[in-house]
Amino acid sequence: MGAAASGAVSNYGHLGISGSVTVSNNGGSGLTMEADANAVLNDSFVITNLTQTSYFVVSIASSAGGTSDASVSEVVNLFIGGTLVGSCSNTGIGNLSCNASTPISAPSSGIDLRMSYIGIAGVNCGYGCGAGASSFDAKSQGGGGKILAVIVADANGNPVKGASVTSASGHTYPSRFASTTTLTSSLNPSNQGDPVTFTATVSAFGRPSTPTGKVTFKDLASSTTLGHATLVNGVATFTTSTLSHGTHSIVASYGGDTLSAGSKSAALAQQVN
Image (cartoon, rainbow, N blue to C red; front, side, top):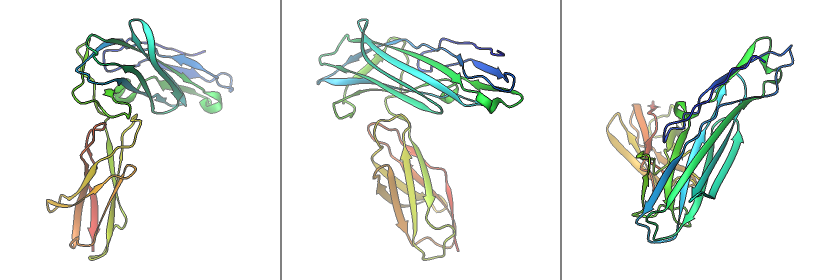
């Protein structure tokens, strides 16, 4: 069937889903499915310094790419003493995220959780192969799957202050989701004195809620802070009509919150005539 595949066991923290498959055209009709790539991540966690009943949450991301549509199936399981206590699964094309959680009670010293991950990628070639071959890579974000965050949270999803997570592998997992900030202008170019609204949109892939907090708008050309705005549904806006004649390099900086790390947008060249 013209397929070659391989699998790999990952390192701690970075799932490293690997392997690839090449699908040859099957007499013009294509192939329906080829499966590939297995990766398992096992680690144990001890949670200490808890003063309340909380939740242990593991968020993971994966994706697949190549010259044809490919899907990834991901399963995350959490165990305590060999008993399954939390799980999640997700299948689709593109970037996927999966959050598994389990309740933990205080005092929690000595609680041990084992997480296992299995990723399988497949391709539906159909007639998309054309006269040649089609392929996909069973890779995940950053060149191999990714643990987005390991969090001890309360019933509202907020991190529990003072809680400590230690992994048996010694790997330090992210405790906050990475964020991305993008910036747009309502009028560019503009004339001097025109009101211009800058809109910053903040997202955090895999996070179960919308980022909160404040965004600072700066003009790098004059090293000036234009103003601040609070995120509403992940969006912050700032309007100004005082930009001088010339080109301004505007950036939006997100300060982060308890669940998301801060981020900065690319510079936007605002032309004022």
